[in-house]
Image (tube, rainbow, N blue to C red; front, side, top):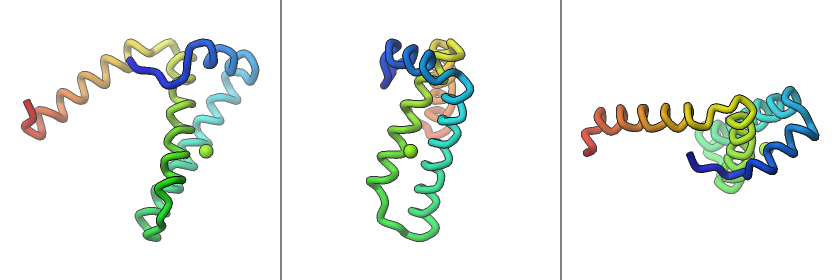
Length: 93
Ligand SMILES: [Mg+2]
């Protein structure tokens, strides 16, 4: 499965800040992205740059979560399975 953050950086971040801090950071970044999406939809705000920035933050933290729990293969399998299901639903071959 594609990664945005190298294993080296994920490891160093985990060693430097620890699992709990990094998981809390993931939740914080997800809530920041959620907030920007809500502003875009609810208040018609022109904040695509902020959405891009917060999406990057979440992707960076997700790579760390995946490494922390050693679930890269399992996540890859779930993504493939779920995308297949969506393709079937949408009638895409
Ligand atoms: Mg952020």
